[in-house]
Image 1 (cartoon, rainbow, N blue to C red):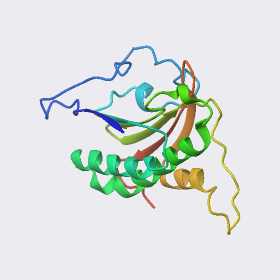
Image 2 (spheres, rainbow, N blue to C red; image 1 turned 135 degrees about the vertical axis):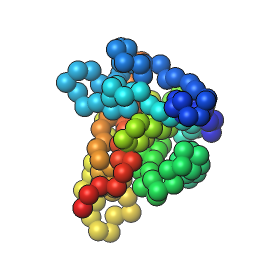
Image 3 (cartoon, rainbow, N blue to C red; image 1 turned 90 degrees about the horizontal axis):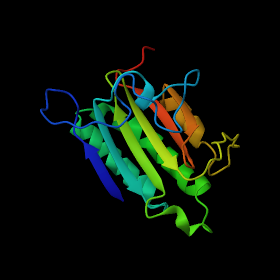
Image 4 (cartoon, helix red, strand yellow; image 1 turned 60 degrees about the vertical axis):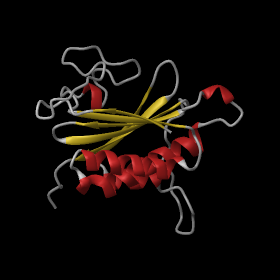
Length: 185
């Protein structure tokens, strides 16, 4: 696992960094939604105020690594209340990528075939996982005795929205948005 952290872009920290394509009026990054498609993270109109990413080697141990990464990142951003839901969401996103998007017969996926990115915006948190497969995520109907098959339903239940986009030159990004403030019930 490799980790890349960008300090908050807010002026209160005095530290900074930018993620390419986040500036208003900038062209969306290749593979991200265009006009008329659901928007997320980088093309939402609001530049992220925080960004963190980690590269994962595509092993089953990546889900717990992703949960730890999210917990450490959100704690550093003073967003501990989001850790339980965000940890489940990224765990499911990463597990799906490792189990369904990696081809064991294709060793050319590099050292880090799966990437987890966390984008902090003023009103929400976007958790995104990129993998080398262009196959769309497929929700399944799991019966009560099934061991798996509920990941996308969990993501849907915990997030405000989720979707996916093709990523050039190949692969896809599956993302979920969590509100920073609790939802009204």
